[in-house]
Image (cartoon, rainbow, N blue to C red; front, side, top):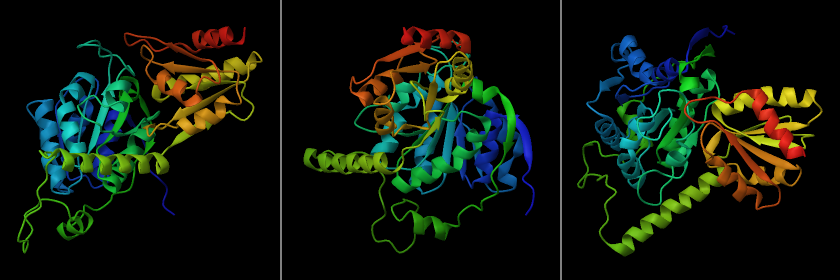
Amino acid sequence: MAEKEITLMKGNEAIAHAAIRCGCDGYFGYPITPQSEVLETLAAEKPWETTGMVVVQAESETSSINMVYGGAATGKRVMTSSSSPGVSLMQEGLSYLAGAELPALVVNVSRGGPGLGTIQPSQADYFQTVKGGGHGDYRLITLAPASVQEMADFVDLAFELAFRYRNPAMILSDGAIGQMMEKVVLPPFKPRRTEEEVLKQCPWAANGRKGLRKPNIITSLELRSEAMEVINLRIQAKYREIEQKEVRYEEYMTEDAEYLIVAFGSAARISKKVIAIAREQGIKVGLLRPITLWPFPSKRIGELGKKVKGILSLEINAGQMVEDIRLAVECKVPVNYYGRLGGIIPEPEEVVEEIKKMTR
């Protein structure tokens, strides 16, 4: 068996290399800190010369998400990436993609806000992503990486889920993971699908195939109320299926935990150091890390909530995920929040002090 090639690179670079290797057909994006290396790496690698992947720097984030819409409508693997204010500009397009039931990947390497804010890392896009920042009753399959390795791994997984359910997927990272350098094993090269394979996988696609008396039309528009309700009910049924089948999470030292931290992304990385310090001081703390922010691991959090004395939602924002945790435990256990704002990442010691307050 050949040895796996281990490479040192940034999280943003891992996204770009994974996109090339997993058979992505097209990337349409616009530079914005702290995710610009995605586009820069793709431009340097020139995949159009090797795999045939199209790479376009659009004139804006609004243009890029609509280019994604067009590419996705043909059944191709297409993606974009941006950071918080840029993703805000994409919200109408994301709603259109969900309404038209098109598979696509959006990467959000989030930064602090509101407004233009700071270029430092933040997790304040939880509401924008998980609750749906655009209009209508839609959901985005949302993966939250906690390492550079997961930045690479989640690209193929996001595409797989997007096509399985004909729904846009998002990788919600942050500026810390996007900019940090770690060892990573890149995925093997996956050949791009032939046109015949695209047609077989995506019979709904609008790609000008021969022999059709009536071409497929991709749209999210339906002017008849009764018909629009039927479409919505079908989409909601699909979301319930995703919630049943695609919940992903990691547990760390929860077997004997008396207190539980729930955290994702960079906050989850901090949590493991918090647990080490707290246990040295005799406080049994465990971690549940949601890997899918939607579908959210509500059931498992509810189960753990029956076993622990308290839960701390650790977030790099003003407290957003904490709402979903409280819904999951149904008031059966105290749920506290702790976080920092403005791009400040909490220190493990200050989080331990918050846990100590819960024990008093």
